[in-house]
Image 1 (spheres, rainbow, N blue to C red):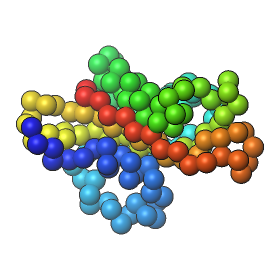
Image 2 (image 1 turned 30 degrees about the horizontal axis):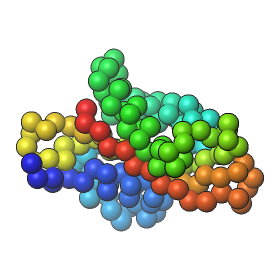
Image 3 (image 1 turned 90 degrees about the horizontal axis):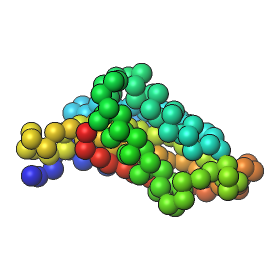
Image 4 (image 1 turned 60 degrees about the vertical axis):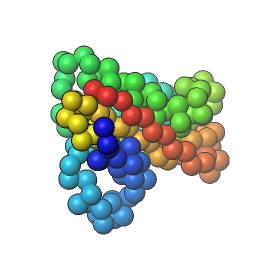
Length: 145
């Protein structure tokens, strides 16, 4: 059950790199499906829905198949726990985020019976809703589909 594709590493790199930086690594992402986006908000539900909407628009998950939507949801929440240090609140605690996100779907194991997995990575800032008072944060979630 050896890993061949590190979907978490790919998602983290994609979330952290800007467009110019990402262009140097394009060939490394050929064996996976990718969705990229940005979200800025004081509402945790808006972060979740932004990622879900972007992923569904690119058909990265099969709409109407509950296990795929369910896996994506839990992967997003796991990644957000890294951003919010385990406290899934933003506006209620006077925090805001400005995040880039990357969603990667692939087969990380050489054994085909292990199936497909999904990774969500966030990178950006979190802090008080006052420009300049935020700090960097990163979060990663990985789940089987």
